[in-house]
Image (cartoon, rainbow, N blue to C red):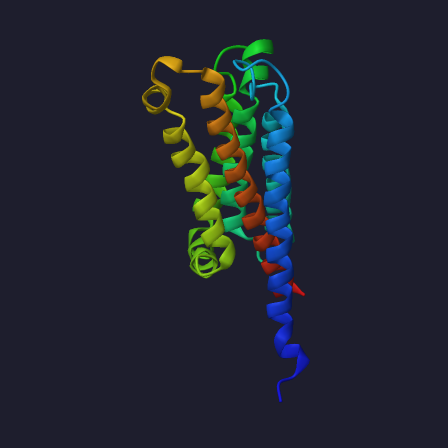
Length: 209
């Protein structure tokens, strides 16, 4: 007869699956809500709720990764590298504010500083980083983060190309439709990254408990 404790990991995983599935449903409803605002051409612009939520997802991911990096018995340099990526993305999402109040492409300089800080820590502790990376790559979080990264930074960019949407809508091309597709897919990618970061945080918490 199996012990109840043997079913705990399955129960926990099922609960997390349901929570993440609900998060995806709520995200879809949030996008539908945001679509009500603005004209067709201005929907999902830089000032849309979708853009704000993208920043919130990235900010939350960055905080969790920094906590994971600092709270590990041996500082986790995989978390530091991922922290650099999410913070750089968060800063890049604020490009309209940098360009409005400071100057064009000025967002690039803080991004460079953050990435330099992260890479310095990773390179300086290269042996530890590689050992931690080898452990991380076998985790559920690593697969999710990879998928989220590809979705956000590769597929959504290709999916949002004008040449594709001109082919779809031909003479009826509407920029707002293209923006909606690209920004909503990007938001979904950021949700996957956030879930991956939560899984990473939970994994490190479990190991240090």
